[in-house]
Image (cartoon, rainbow, N blue to C red; front, side):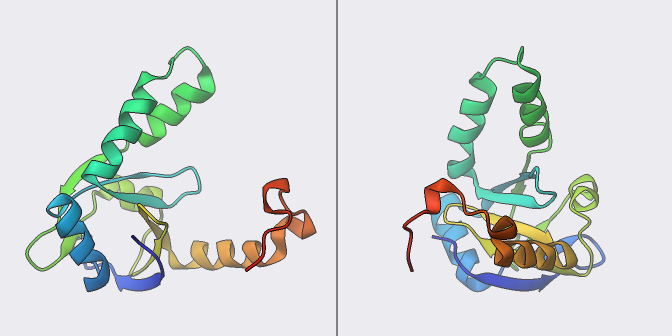
Length: 148
């Protein structure tokens, strides 16, 4: 559903305008209701509400006695904000999430199938640079034999 890379502007109030190609899908799938949360990679994840709900249910159903699981629950569920896209196709990002992802004037939206990632422009460029090196030539076993 969501694919491609777009650069959008963060306005002085902390709003981003969702590009039309994503906006239409968000309206059709979720009536413009989204969940934005923190990602361990220091970006934000934007899900249509119906896509987020089963993820949240799985996360909250895991045992909080495991410190790694509890940390992930705190990060993903604890930072999750349910937001509405306004009539102009804008989403107001809470200050804490903008600070977490170091979002500034230019925000990079990256389609990832059922979700969008929202990146600080410099961090995104670093991610692209790292992806081009394939971890110093160490290809994950899951990608062996994968061709384009």
